[in-house]
Amino acid sequence: MICQKKPYIFDQCFAPFHYQAPLSNVIAQFKFNAQLHQVRTLSHCFSAAARDYDLPLPELLIPVPAHPRRVWQRGFNQSIELTRFIAKAFGLPWRSNIIIRNKYTPPQNKLKQQQRLRNLRDAFTVVRPCPAQHVAIVDDVVTTGTTANAIAQVLKQAGVKRVDVWGVCESVIKSS
Image 1 (tube, rainbow, N blue to C red):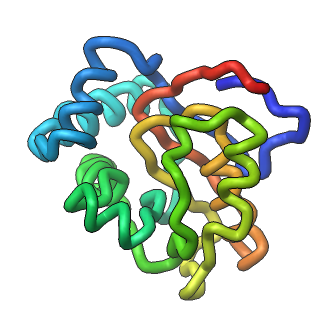
Image 2 (image 1 turned 30 degrees about the vertical axis):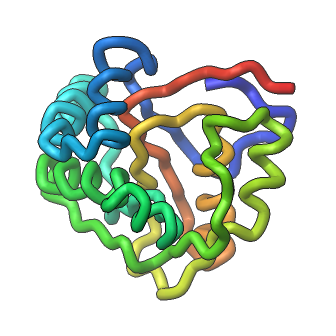
């Protein structure tokens, strides 16, 4: 993950693999070709790496919310599917109804760093009290941390004390 000029709001990020073949191919099949069976491979890879690392477990997992239009276009929210399997692997509860994405935005992977920041301004809202003080946000790919930072900010404003980020892969881009 690249460094930002401002420090991250989230407390820790664990994304054990680089976004490259073969995992980048598996993610693409899962995310863009609706090959939902690929979620098992991704969650297994993440879970095995997290156990090897002895990752501190949160009280609750929260998938990165997708805007309803994006869910309609894709047919599912890949973060929810991934969270289901990771939660099961660790015996953790998860909730997808605490935070929503209330702003439809272009995909982050097509934008430069400054555009990503503007793109996500006021994009997320906490709609229910979070029953946990330590949560992990779950996503497939963590690129600059901008999405995770935006979510961590609203969760912390709502009273959550610790926000970790769990991603299967990290993909570093050049900021401009």
